[in-house]
Length: 428
Image 1 (cartoon, one colour):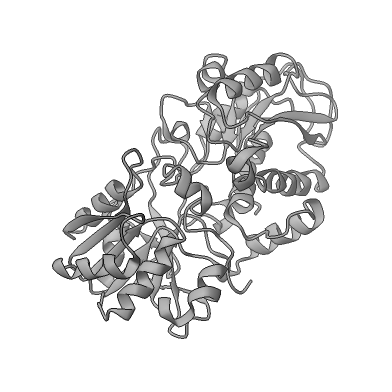
Image 2 (tube, helix red, strand yellow):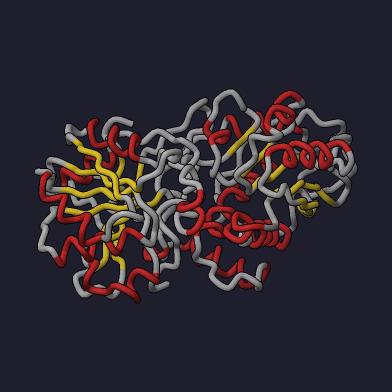
């Protein structure tokens, strides 16, 4: 892959980021050892009928939930393709103990009450084994799923996925879901020669963005911060950056939308305001390169997912799977499809580990015993599902090259680090 087509370093940091700022982030080879508490016994190569809901002799039925309308639905429309790619790959390899993974899908209309209703319907009427949710509103039916011990896996774009009160719900850490960000961002800033940061956030009376976790990560590395607000309705980027001269910051961190990021960076460069580094939660996209080029050289973004510039084998497997099983997906490198594929891999891991006659309890127990999961390298850091609360232990940083023609990975060049691609926290 050459240039990325992500809307930002975190999920949906483009159009959905501007509407709701709390939204913003492969075949794993390890097979868990777990004993199923199922109602029958069979060898792994033999598929037989089991007593568990949604499990037949030849199928395991999953309930898929995502919004299929409105602006949120548009932003998440690639989610189904990511699921199709991962399930298609598993089924082509013989399924789970001879059973194909199939799903029934319903739209929750991006509404909590509808989510609760359709989750109940999928469980009680359609009889699915587990849920996969690619929606902002998974908290709608979360209490029902927890109370009935129904496992759920999903895209980490809601706080419920980071809430230890829901041990039946599985995903990977993200800023969007409220994952803690240790000193990794501050350590990166120190390595770039930075010592003081100004955090720029978009003006809003209701949205909080990500300024607080960013500031805490910087503070953990003894980087003091000042937060300023950019009001797009009252000032142009050029007018705004003139006011930045009042700060003594040598680092700028942008917690703004994908359309504002390159404009502010270009304006700062035009005003000859120098920073040791400019870091943004958004702007990592092909559109940034095409529209702004060298005027945004040095703009750095970060991700909890491994960017496609890394070109690792698991990404090649993913791209091949989208071609074979989700041919409708026009841009397979986008965040939603890529991240959904990884989340779907977590579900596949649980099914593989739950035994020849999987039960919901065995599925959840197996995933809760899984350590060091990184989707075969597609996650920037590994996940330890034995912990009730996840933190973002590693990030990968991408910077616009000097010519403004592409993003390049920023290596961690400290001697002895496990990976130069990943920047990991000293104090996770």
